[in-house]
Structures are given as C-alpha cells and as structure tokens.
Length: 269
Ligand SMILES: [Zn+2]
Image (cartoon, rainbow, N blue to C red; front, side):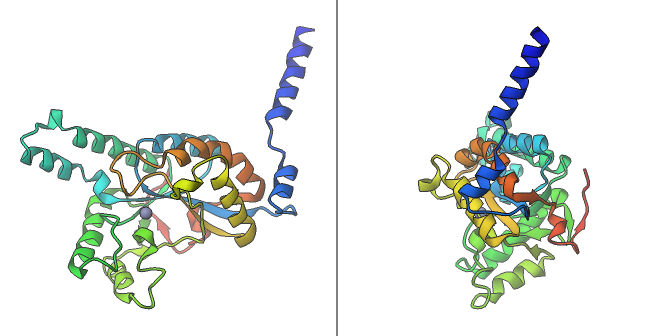
C-alpha cells in the first residue's frame, strides 16, 4: 500500500513539475514539432555566479561558449596594483577574487565548453585610439592563450562594435584578424543586460520570441557584467536554470561546431 502511494505520489509530482511543451509552444505562438538549433553563449565573465550556470549546463548536458574579458583573469595585474599600493599578496582581495575567477575559467574548459576572447577591456573598439585597440586584442590573446579552445581562436567584439559597423570601421575587424582571431557574432540576444528586463520572465519571453522568430543560431546571454570586476549578471545567473526547460520545448541545444564546422576544437572534455 505504502509503495503504491509512493508510486502515485511520484507520478503526480512528476506531472505537476514537468513542462507542458504544448502549452509553452502555444503561449509563444511557436507551433509545430520542429526544435530549432541554437547555441548558448555567455559574455563578460567569469563572474561570481558563473559556477551556477556551469552547474546547470552540466545537469542539462548543454554545451556552451564563454567570451571572457581578459583583464578579469589577469591576476598578475591585480597583484602588481596591490604591490604598488604596499598591499601584500595575502591581503590583496582583488588578487584573491581574480584567482577565484581564474579557477572558474579552468572549470569552463575542463567541462568541455568553448572559450573565446572578449578583448582585454570592454571599451568600444572603434572609439579608442588604434594603438590601444591593438594592445587590448593582443594582450587578451596572451592572457587567455592557455584557455582558448579553438584554432583559430575566437574573438567577440565588446558591444559588437567593429562588427555591426564593419562597413564604416573596417580597421577593427582587420585588427582582430591580424592577431589570428576569428570573430564570432550572435544571431539572437536575451537582452539580459537591460536592467528593466531583469524581472519576472521578461528575459525568457525575449529568448523564446527570438528563437521562434529567427529559428537558428547563437544566442547571447551575459554571466558577467562589463561594469564590474567580480559581480556578474545576477538575474541571469540565478534564473537561467528555471528558463531552460521551456527553452528546450522549442530548441535543440547544439555544440558550437554545428554552426562553425571549420573551427578546429583544440580542447576536448
Ligand atoms: Zn560584452
């Protein structure tokens, strides 16, 4: 009797929590049985809560790509800053936090995800002096070198500046290519950086509408925050696990090389 009750309870709770995909598709007017091929990408990290995103990706068995702002893992730079201010390495909080982020980056690679450069700093690359732009791109390659997962290594321009306006600012993409990078843009955006969207299911709604309209491609999320060294996009990082089952109703999570078959992966799980 007790066993039957437990089984019934199990069935009940499963059906209670299972995502009703027919309902989800209807809600987003995303009819039919087609699952659209997409790839998740995360920019501006690593950040404090990136491990929560990694936990989710592992649980859901989803491959993703992370575009890293190199200065966030340039721990030697933080150490130097502390030393210049007379602070020892043991007391250098910025250095310690940098090491935490570096460990997160190592975990990203170890768990089979792809890593690309999001330059050294997040400035708009067409608006800074050319020499500084070159310095940022080159330095990012030095700092991220051991963690870049493809050949050619990948690069995503901050704010897409230099990509969207590549016709009028061709020197930016030329610089990216000069250092041997391949630029990887995005087809869909979660717009999760918009503070006004960081409530309820607004970001999920945007994502679902993007997928159901555009039907294919890379989608841009942010685990990090370009304005902060350590604290990331908290709303995305704490809610994405809840959104994924609904996204799965309309999407098939593909690895990056589904979209870029010529990219040679140099790090495997
Ligand atoms: Zn960015």
